[in-house]
Image 1 (cartoon, rainbow, N blue to C red):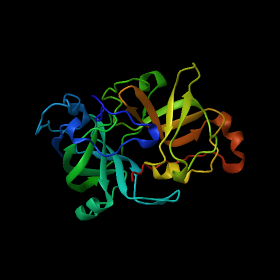
Image 2 (image 1 turned 180 degrees about the vertical axis):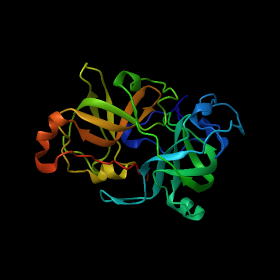
Image 3 (image 1 turned 60 degrees about the vertical axis):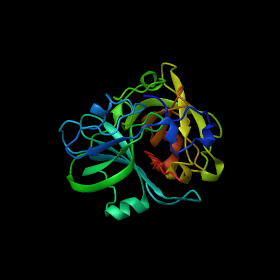
Image 4 (image 1 turned 90 degrees about the horizontal axis):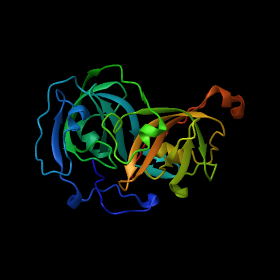
Length: 271
């Protein structure tokens, strides 16, 4: 799957608006339909108008990555949350106004029925324009899948990774500033390195993730950490991991004083 936009942008100016000339939208309806497991067979650059997918379980909300509100001095207005139906996972992006119209507030564990337009963003499978959404029940959400840096640091994401909540363990963060920025400080690229010396970009995307902005002023741990987040590819050749949670490993807890186990939820927010 290719990046939607063929144009290169500095990381601090990554576009959220999809370019109509660069993507052919695919209308999908979910509820009794498969998600990314079957979406993997779809070429989002092809001229497809409607895709009928096989019957599977309804998707379950696994993580809230964005929600409206003031964070780090900026008022975020959009929702972004992951859903997983057991065959695959993808992101749902919607404004607060749209979800209010449908009378739905995203909550982890909700079972959904929804429909919308399939428009991947930075190789993340995504439903960009919702036409319907409702809660049909509750269920235990799927946990984050454990992956390694070599699996994540690839130019083309497989559908076994793209759109999933991911855990990567035992990595060390490096780069400056060591004090994480807020919204006004802009986006910052760090490096994460595992115990075998494998490295990749950790992108602190404060202009799109509200709690990343709220973390401004916090010094990231010096020791090994476990990260929970998602993978994406910018510009077609720049894999990046964005954390939604940073958990210091037991060996680094002494660096945190009396705070004990620290988890930073970086709830993804978009302008």
